Image (cartoon, rainbow, N blue to C red; front, side):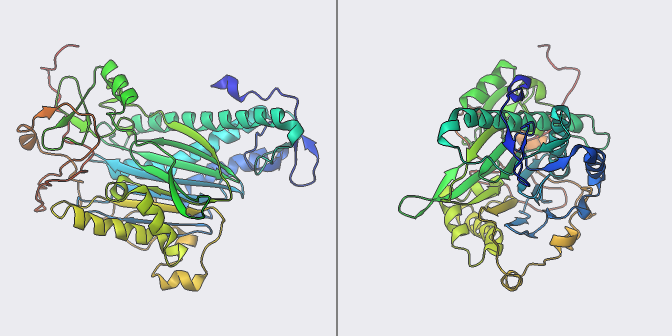
Length: 473
């Protein structure tokens, strides 16, 4: 990857401030600053551990200048979904968005850890890249790629390719560093716990995306007849996708579905019918990392147009019951933009009850980013029942979560997202080539019935039981 971010080209770019020609070592990341400010910027990065004080960063139910976010706990235990919108991310025209869906005994902690740490790793990479490439007294991170002049199309195409390679490397290295940090974390057991991630950086007309797992991003856009259409931006990385299944089997992992949920392909250890992970890529889940599950993200770059209206990121609790088209219709017809995420989650909750009345609703998390940068007036926002305190404190006022990811509900000691070994003994495997669902367990302190006829359930079936009788590979 290193070769594709070379900036040895002699082309130049214009500074936004005064029109001077400067070296394009920045490749358009959105910040203009003098070299002497390097220490100040580094100091700022070091203070990011105080995340609640960061302006324009929200991670609880609320809104920002151009977005709204909302999450609702399902009926399987503690809410394992996390979300974030960070406007003015590194510069005033960059916005970072993410949704993270945890699974396993400590999935809620993994999702929140990734939510907090992954954006910082992106910032760290971009700052390091800037420092390496900075050979002059001033560097310019352009706000956006300018429209191409007819005579310079070849040169600008090269610049766009370099920009694409830069962000690709930023996502790849940040995801790698994130998973490495989880593996060595002294207080967070990620052996059988993990999280999905769908992350988007919007910079002007550029949209950069990195993702793992089965959380999804879509784009609401207008077609030639001015009707709203849904464009899927990411791929649900399930174990039955040919490339994913081939990699897992090549690494001695196994992919099959249980007889009572044939629509759900799962990843299993070679020597044990566990843990039954319902995705091919994830942060954490280190019990499966030697057997084909990876944390390398898929990356894509899309140029936005004036027809593109908004982006929706959501966990699978939404996509399991609503189609892309239904989501676009719900968001575009919301009475106010500030209420769009909440209304979408409410709609998903109703669909869970209608389609799967015997099941326990999954957690839902939604981020709606409006591409024209506009939001409702404050009075409209308050009429929807939200508190604007999140714009300043980034806290929702409830006891669900502290900023360091610690849980404050003492009555929830585990998340009940895995089957007991007794239940698992009666299950049979079948070949699978489709995506689908799972079942929750009977919790020790909650009277939960099993899910029947459900198309999507838990991400894990059971924890592996390692013993000295493990067969030799």
